[in-house]
Length: 137
Image 1 (cartoon, rainbow, N blue to C red):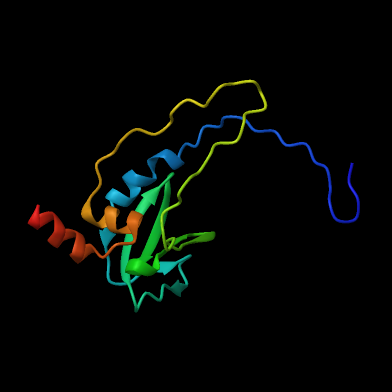
Image 2 (image 1 turned 45 degrees about the vertical axis):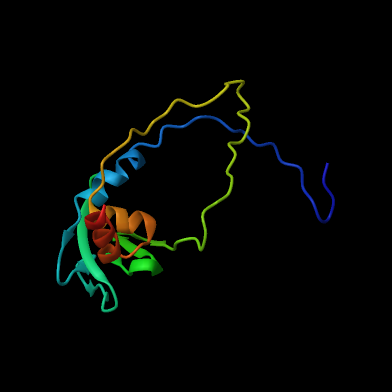
């Protein structure tokens, strides 16, 4: 029952396959540096303050402009995805209770080795700093 400030809604929580999203790390591992790019054939991507890459994901071509610790923007034809990094890690994240009676969802992702560029994009840490840290180990 709802009133002027609240509403009652039924929510369904169930396991879903996230393909092709489980292959996003593979797409980031296959980034290729480029000097210029255009999206949709007409507008050139402005990446003057970052590094420009291209890759494919889910059968689509993407242009990625990486801004180091400030995140990155991925352009994919009919949409743009902007990624910003959190200032600090999440301390906890709990899964919602499934409404279909299942105990848990099956794992859909497997551990995947990552390139230094992919690690920089996933963590927001400076690529050069990561390389220097790897050399010291």
